[in-house]
Structure formats: structure tokens, C-alpha cells
Length: 332
Ligand SMILES: C[S@@+](CC[C@H](N)C(=O)[O-])C[C@H]1O[C@@H](n2cnc3c(N)ncnc32)[C@H](O)[C@@H]1O
Image 1: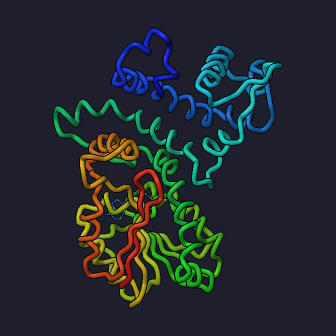
Image 2: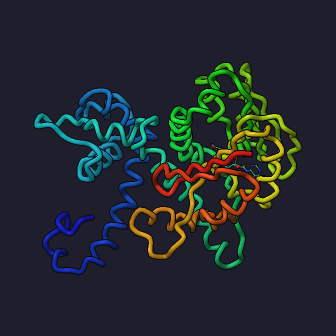
Image 3: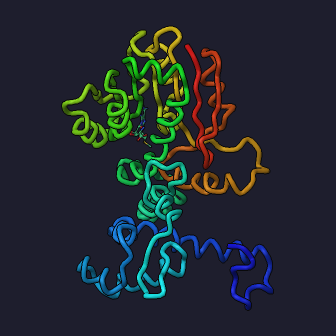
């Protein structure tokens, strides 16, 4: 929150105070966005301008809850209000809150944060007993967050002559840690001549991925990256926010190398920590998210660590996708 946005009584206080105050406001901003998405209220307001009463009667939801949400969403600038009291979404808000394919989409991130926070009662056990909590409890949260990664990866592929030519002509792609298979479904729709294999060790994720894969050229195998035994079978191996979760990362990367044909590409999408402690505001989200990862028994890697894992590959490239997320590519 900028100093200018603060009530007069707080303007006299320090910039540090303003920053901390903003954290409390941000907490509700995240929940307002998530509730608006989850209940479909944002979708309805985006569809056409509507008054609070019309929203209540159309949704049949609990009137005091809808009224409180509308009043807060207007105060927080998520939703705007016309003179006739009808609410609407500015085009920029529509993009940031609802447009999954847009690079400025933040809605999924808000929903991830809100859904993950439902697990945060477990921090007590982490700090007292060192007990971590598997992320498979929150597959829905992960799907919300990785949607953005998927569309960023698809955009990066379209700009990469070699990968887009291969996929358009028809090639084989392996997705290591494919989760619920939602990237594979998107890729299959865009590159119908290619065929896909997804592996994941999590039962729940594999069951969901198999449903998505039904009737498509997508094979799903329940397996960890450490135990795959593919040999020269793929043109592209993709790891989307999964390498951090592997217990033996070097083994996974080495298995990915075996799985690739000579000249094939490994593509890793991961959130990476800044190397130095002198990072700016850009890195603040990932710095905070370290707590979320610690709860799951994981930690973010740095660019140096990823480069070390890829020592046997050539042409290692890091492309910043935004929000501390990188696309790392390298050639076998
Ligand atoms: C954050 S999810 C990402 C899922 C998917 N790649 C996506 O982008 O939607 C991380 C996935 O990595 C999987 N995973 C964990 N350990 C793994 C391992 N050792 N090898 C392969 N996948 C693993 C998890 O089961 C989970 O589905």
C-alpha cells in the first residue's frame, strides 16, 4: 500500500508501518479474490453489470455474505460501481482475476494461496515436531497455481522455433511429475500430431490424469522420476514445478537425459530463489512461499543449483517467465 493510500491518521507513521499494515489488507485481498472466483460472483459481474440485490436473487446465496463480499470487493478495487449502483469489472481486472491464458493472470495465484492456507494449522507440528504435510491434500490448489505456468510454457514453445516445429510435425514428449495431467491435455489440443507420456508417483494425481487422458494420445504411468527407465525415446522432456519435489534430483535429471534422444530438449519450469539476500520486491512472494514449501518438506532451488544438475547437458538457458518462475532449457 502506498503512503498516499493510507488514512490521514496513519500518514504520520513510518513507511515500515505502512508496509506491515498493507500485509493485513493483502490477506483479505487474497481471500476476496478467491471467494469471488470460487462462488462465481466475479464471473457473473464480468458477464454484465449487476446490482447487489440482483446478484443475491440470481445466485440464491446467503444475502449478508454476498452483501459483505460486494462491499469489500468495491472497497478493495476488485469490482467497480456505476452511478446506478450496478457493479462491473474493469477490463484489466477481468484479465488479472479471470483470464487464465493471459500472462497478467493472478487469479490462480490468489486461489492457490487461499486454498493452501487452509492447511496452515499444520505449521505448529512442523515447528514443534518437524512433521511435514504432503501436498497431495491440496491438488486443487496446485492446479490453480500451475495453470499460469502451463500457458507461459505454451507461449514460450510457440516462440522457440525448434520445439514448436517438432511438436507441430509430431514428436514425443515426456512430462515428469505430470500431476493431474492438465498441461498434457492443453498440449494435446494444440499439437494433435504429437504423443505424450506423463509420469507421477502420486495416486490421486495419476487417477485424475488418467481421466483427462482417456481417448487421447496420452499415456499416464504411476512412477517417480528416480525410477523411470526410458532410453532415447523422447524429443522433449518437461518438468513443471516437479523437480523441487524429487528426493534425488540428480537421479531424476540423469534419467531425463537417458529418456531423451541425442539433440533432445529438457525443459524445466520452476520457481527459483534469488542468489543474493539483496533482492527487491519482485522476490518477496517466493521468499514468503518458502514457508509453504517447508511445510511440505521442500525448498526452492537457486539457478546455480539447477545449472549444476544440468552439467552434462549443453546450451543451458534460463528465461524469466515472471514472478520468480523460470523456464530452464538445455540440450542432450
Ligand atoms: C506442483 S505439482 C506440478 C504438477 C504438474 N507438473 C503441473 O504443472 O501441473 C508437482 C508434482 O510432482 C510430483 N512429484 C513429486 N515427487 C516426484 C518425483 N520424485 N518424480 C516425479 N514427480 C514427482 C507430485 O506428485 C506432483 O504431482
